[in-house]
Length: 460
Image: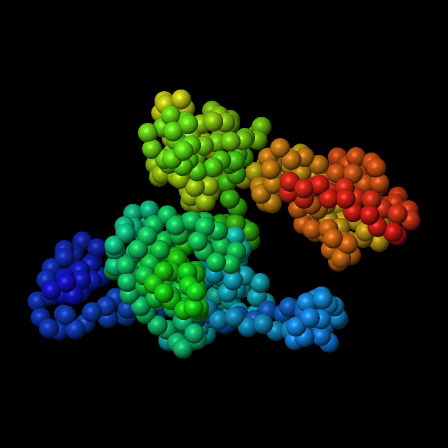
């Protein structure tokens, strides 16, 4: 009887949004299952074949259990072609496709195969490693089948869903299940960070970038990862919500090649039970603001350090990842109501969503061949730099964006802050460039790396 009710729910809602749930009227209806929904949605899910050329160092000690690790990085760089296989979803009839960054983000040759076996070449319009999303454009495409977005904020735990993709490269495959969790953060693998829909629909390698759809055939998420010990699906998969994907599509159409996130200009931490008691709250939840930049849009709107942010744009926020997600979904240029608790009083503040200001000028400089360390790219720290690298809001000075080949060998890392060069305190990228050009025989660098102060000494 349970099976009959579930199948009737599928059939009733797959046909039209306004259809009502009903008990199947015949054996034919029961036996069809998800078939009508699959026929409608599957043509908009594609297979993606991507290639990229990477430089690898061929060491004569490769495979040796001791010397391979000891001489890691030794040898002449050699180009090697790496292939990746994944899935994607068509989002418009002119060939806008979404997939995962880890499938296509760094690829130079992308081929997309549709369900009817037709093929297109594609280019990456916008890619973002942090969200693990990439937007593609199929060349000379028109009249293609595509999926409609559904408001993923209205997805409920327990809803029937289907995952469509190309697991293990065996061809398009469909699995079904339910939404088993919402607002999952900090659980994805790889470089993806953020906020996810959890499902028990089987997701396996190759499903990445595929569609998670509801029983109306609307897109609610993009499959991105699984939680597993065996390498296969164990019933816990994660999908990037459709509302965030929609913002990616909008920015790609507006000409951005990097995803632009609104900047909060503040740090906060989740309120647990012990902290809630100390703050005089009746329950855990929300984010307590611990630090704010002087040009933070939240500070400008009247939010203060010590306030507890409990909702943004009408949606609850309980972790920094949820906060970033809600701001990203709101979109650049929007004004969002933020619910705040201050000394037990509920307040609402309206905050403008915008990118971190790139002022004062970051004045990026790459050291020349005459420098003690040529090829180092460094910039003055401003709000934009703080946001891009996730640096402490109080940090000032000069940051290494790219240490260059020689700098990397000497131990410099992206994100290092140059404090002192040969006894001279450094405040700007021009001062750092000048000090490196004037270095003679010996060089001493004092670098801040996270919370540590690192001293490096070299003989030139």
